[in-house]
Length: 85
Image 1: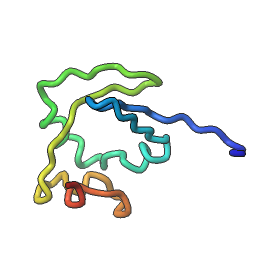
Image 2: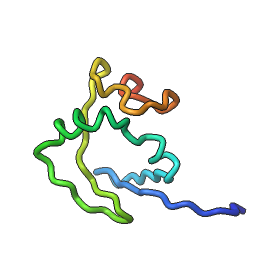
Image 3: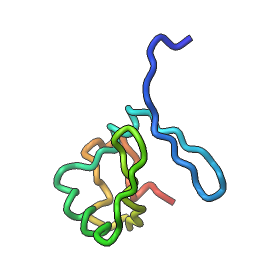
């Protein structure tokens, strides 16, 4: 049995599939500070929707592999836009 507990963000898609994102995954996917402005620009007209535990939904990005956002996190082990289908 697991000795420690962690919180996870759970999202649900239009087909009622659940995605459980543990805190460690969320931390790993944190955008690099230098990507914030570019991300905010693409989400400019969208309002943040409060979720829970201090999180908000900000929108969905479509990121072409050639984009400056293709590597939005400095951790090279995290999948990036070039790996996305």
